[in-house]
Amino acid sequence: MTATAEGSQAIRRRRIKRKPLLRSEQARGLALVSPTLAYALVLLAAPILVIVAHSFWTQDYLVIDHTFTLENYRIALTEPIYRDLLMRSLWISLVVSVSTVVLAYPIAYFISFHGGRHKSLWLFLITIPFWTSYLLRVMSWKVILGYNGVLNSGLLALGVIDEPSTALLYNSSAVVITLTHAWAAFAILPIFVSLEKVDRTLLEAATDLGDGPIRRFVRVTLPLSVPGVVSAILIVMIPTVGDYVTPRLVGGKDGVMIATAIQAQFGKAANWPLGAALSVTTMAIVTAMAAAVVFLIRGAARLAR
Amino acid sequence: MKALRAILPSWLTGYAYLYLAFIYVPVLLLPVFSLNTSPAPKLPLEGVTLKWYADLGRTPAMLDAAWNSLVVGLAASVLSTVLGICAARALTRYRFPLQRPINGLIMAPLVLPEIIVAVSLLIVLLQMGLSLSLFTVVLGHVLVCVPYSVAVLTSGFEGFDRSLEEASADLGETAFGTFRRVTLPMVAPAIISSLLVSFTISLDEFIMAFFLTGTDVTLPVYIWGQLRFAAKLPGVLALGTILLVGSFVLLTFAEILRRRAERWVRDAGADHA
Image (cartoon, rainbow over all chains, first blue to last red; front, side, top):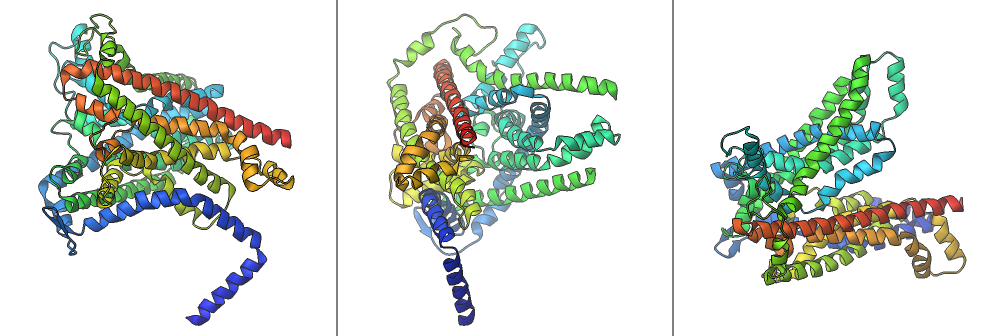
């Protein structure tokens, strides 16, 4: 024990002697990053640890009981209301991430391979709406899909339907449509970046060796763009599972997601430990689901090659 | 196969324009219906009016919320840009232990469900004895804005020719003098771009503000409160349109500056070589 400690100390001393410049460079880098790091540690890492800790405690009115228990997790996983909300949130985030990526892929492909000198203009046009208020974009879907909304009144005016349809708003499809719209740019950008990295000479080689455009796409372009597809899936899936605004505005009774339950526990119901357990469970399961999807995509890409 | 090769690009182009429509139509409906005489957002439009905009100026609660948003946005953008400069500079200029995990932690708010970040921050702030106010909203907004600031600033700092700084140091400038007289002018566009982007994010951010605010509300939280009343919809649409146009203008500026920053850094490097 002491021997190894002394040994490592000796190595460290030697290293210091050999590379004093490097060491001071490292120290400077750490010093420079430390304010930002401290901010993230105090206001992000620590709070998340506190949430995890709370999930193992219980609450009696306003007093937190610090005895370790798994009761909150039992409630989160077995109570039908939370189980259903959780399942629906996971299902919606899976459908949204897959459909966002499927819809986004051709656009990313178009910009990368046929964008020409307007590439950056296309990217700018596609990203700009996503920097504007998320709340407002969700609201405009409510305006589009509502009973007296744009779609219904437009179709009525055109004589396509006789009376307004109630099937458009306040259900989980409305949530899926809204979220697919809201996250489009986040899927396009990573796929675009990975398509840009595809070596164009490989495509020429495939053509020279007799592959048609479809075979060439499936066997060369698609597998090489897998990293982009994977990050697009992750970037969309993980945040959407906890979305609060969309289900509240366009989801109705059938579109309620887990975030509403989490919010209630930290608000009106005032049961922090249960809210914490719901948050941790959601994060853990969505991470597992994302990992499974990534694994499947990688496997499929390997098969395609 | 040949036919397919001919059809595919034009099919893709068509799809691209359809997709643009899918992205833009919902966003552009807000301005359209904010000009409608009828309070219900129905097609066809009844007539064009600016009365909903005029009404906004007579709503004190809205004006208070706008002022709060402005204050929060300014504070959050300055703080997050300062923190972003530290991180982006450290990450592009130096190599240090744990660089990847540190970078990951700083960028994490980008990929975490916002509600979980918000409630955990809420609990910690309440337990620290802070009462909820615009200050706690700023704390939350900085957390959300820093990753974007870091991303914008990193693209401004990368490719920055280090020999310029070394030359300055060799010519006797102090580290701070070098930063102020060599580094800062080169990265100024990226810094302004980061300020604009984080201001826009803070201006439009809802979840953090919703959980972390006390009695003073920001514009998105004010809008959320108004959404319950169908009669208030036209006012919300008008306000939303102003926010959209504001965000659009700020972001276009930010993008122009970011590109200029990239070009400057590249050209300076080229001149030097």
